Amino acid sequence: MKPNIKACGQAMVTAMVNAILALALMLLVEFAISGTFQVAEPYLWAGLLIWLVIFVAQFWRQRHLCRSDDQQFIKHPAKTTDLP
Image (cartoon, rainbow, N blue to C red; front, side):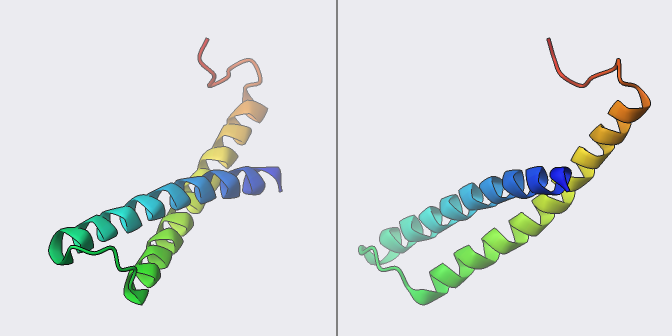
């Protein structure tokens, strides 16, 4: 259960940062085109969709990495992946 929680936290942070950056870029392009910062509903839906896609992909990736790291530690407790 702990690897899932760790993976979920890391995936959520990554997805949130990417969604905020994508939303900011969309607003910047909107300002460049129209000259006003109007947050239209499609921009919010696009930001939510970006967050969802990145969250799912990162959660799957992080969970896989956490599990393989735990299994490697169980097999070889003396070998760690931490850098000095």
